[in-house]
Image (cartoon, rainbow, N blue to C red; front, side, top):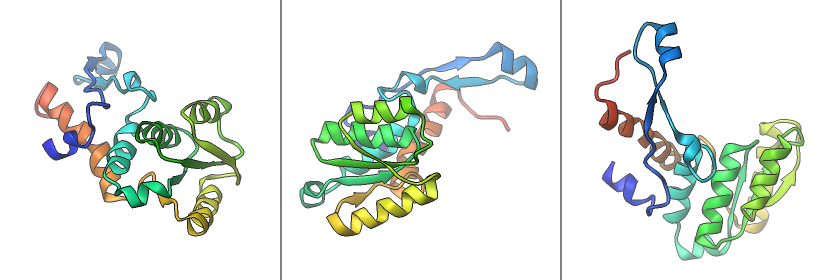
Length: 165
């Protein structure tokens, strides 16, 4: 966990767990919600892209990054790229939320609306990567992304103790 946290570079906030009386009553056990909405991009999905992009070599960074996403991952990749000052392209489905598209553009990414779903956008992102040399920042099929996003679970254990299932 220390190695993962070091890869955050102070950008990722350690968010508090918030006790939910409503969900606790409904489920018959204590339920806490992790306040990831307080991250800069409003989601835990900044964790993985930031750790991944920060770990890239200078040579990889000069070619920029590309991702396919309908929203939260897109914003995480765009914001991380902005912080690292590297080019970023995000392929989003044409059905993506206008608010998510605007936020992604607001972080400085070039947004390409292509495809009616994630799979079609992913296909386009792969094609662009082959042409440009941009590094693909995959939303879920990358061990480094999974580990960095998953570090949230370790934070929960540190903050509220043993999880009960």
